[in-house]
Amino acid sequence: MKQLVLFLSLNLFLLSPDFGSSSPIQDNPYLCAANTLAINPRLCIDITEVPGYIYKDYLATAVKKDGINSSSFNEKKPDFEKWKDLFEGLDASKIEAKFFESDEFALMPLVGITRKQAEDFCEWRTEMLVAELAKMSKRDRAQFPKKFKFRLPTANEWSRIRFLTQQKPMMKQLDKIASANMKAFKFSKAKLIKNNERIANVYEVKDPKIGFFNVLNNVSEMTSEDGIAVGGSWFEPNEKANFQQTFVYQGAEAWLGFRCIFEIID
Image (cartoon, rainbow, N blue to C red):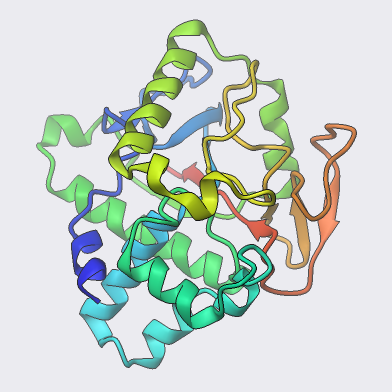
């Protein structure tokens, strides 16, 4: 579990060279959380699917708080049996070992979890941001909302990203974020993902208009409605590039991930 301790010290905002991001469509002075862009004055959404390394950081806090043998930690772990659909020839125990002991899956979209697990992750992410903001000076803290939360998007909220248009400076910023993280996690050495015919890294495809990554490909994404996903996946492609198309699921799947909404409450 040495790797888990290492990831506990990683800042949640590694995905952005700046602490937060703002958008010209916001009519208030607040910044979005890092890794998110605004879709309206009160909602921001992740630019990528939630990657493996952030979820591993989440698991690390469970180990620190409750111990590696705790039910709390085990309840948060992905179902690595599902991951076998992505990595033929590897059993679940070998996949799990690689997940915790290497960066092989750091930039893979996190799959194999339930909606409840995703919602618990969102709560943790909210708590972590609250803690980070509490360390700021009063002046810097004032740039962020007083009250906020991370949560799963509704299907309608998710589909609204299709109306966005990013300016060239933001597009360049997104490219820099992707490049920095690809280098930081040495993605060139992640053979199981780099050459995988089913699943790709979270920066694989950037929409040329809206700037978000992997919105209609790679893995479908959970919504706040249980059993309803959006986007498209290697398992069930979104052949018509329809942002309003939904997909049905019953539990954890190897083709199902998620991205979070950052909701500005006050």
